[in-house]
Image (cartoon, rainbow, N blue to C red; front, top):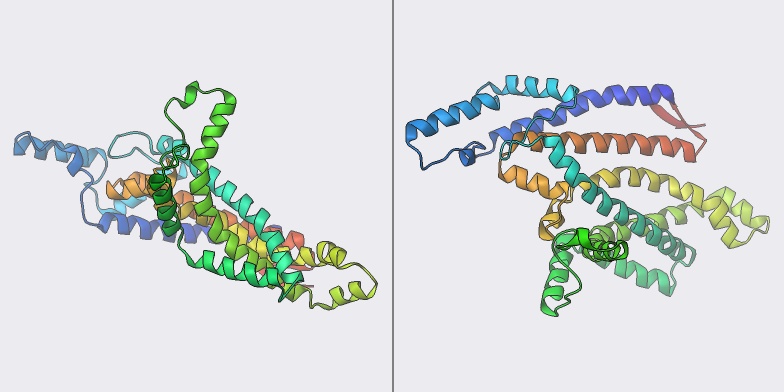
Length: 333
C-alpha cells in the first residue's frame, strides 16, 4: 500500500504541471488586458502609458510567458500565490475568506445526499419492481435530468413572486448578523444555506440513490449472499451485515471524486445566489483577468481532485481486504 501511495504521489506531479500549464496558457491567451482597469483614462496618454508600463513590470507581465510561468511555479513551491491584480490583496487572503462558505455547502450537500440516497437505494433494491422502486426511480430520473441552475432559477422566481420574505435568495448572511444572538445567527445561516444547498444536493442524491440500488442488486446475486440466506439469516441482516459492505465500495470511490467536483463546479450557483464562495471568486477573477487568483484556484482544485482520488483508492482497499495494491496495480486475492 505504501508503495502504491508513493507512486501515485509521484505521478501526481506531472499531472499537476500539465493542469497548470494549460490553465496558464488559456488565461493569458484569452482576450482582454487585466491592467486596463487600473489605468486612469482621464490623464494624458503619455502618463497613462508610463503608468501601464510600471504596472506591467510590477506584476511581471512584461516577461515572456514561459518566464512568467517559471516565476509563478517557483513561488507556488513556497505557497506564495502572489497578489491579486485588481485590488493588490494577497491571493491567499481572498481565497481563505471564501473557501469556508463553499466547503460548508459542499459538505452539507454530500451529507444530506448520502443520508437520503442510501436508504432510498436500499429500499428500491430490496423491493425491486414494487411501487416504491417505480415511483422513486421516476422521480429520481426526473430530478437528475433537470440542471441545478434551472432549479435555482425556479426557486428564486417562487421566492420573489410569492413573496417569501423570510427566505433570502442572496448572500450567506443578513445585514446586522454580528449583532444577532447565537440562536439568531443559527437561524439566519439556515435560511441562507437552504436554497443553495437544495440545488447542490438533489443532482447527487438522484445519482447516488440509483447507484446504490444498482450495486446492491448486483451484490445480492453473489454466492455468499445466497449462502447467508440459506443459513436462515433474515433479509435485513443479510443486507446490512453482508451486502452493504461491498455495495459501499464503489460508492466510496464515487464520493472521493464528488467533493472536489462539487467545489470546482460551484461557480454558476454561487453567482446566482450571490454566495461569497470560491466559485464566485473564480467567475469574477476570470472576468477581471486576475491571473494570480485564477491560477491559485486552479491549483487548489487540481490538488483536491488528486487527493480525493487517492483517498477513494485507499478507502477502497480498506473496505475490501481482498484488494491489494502491488506496484500500482490492483488485484483481488
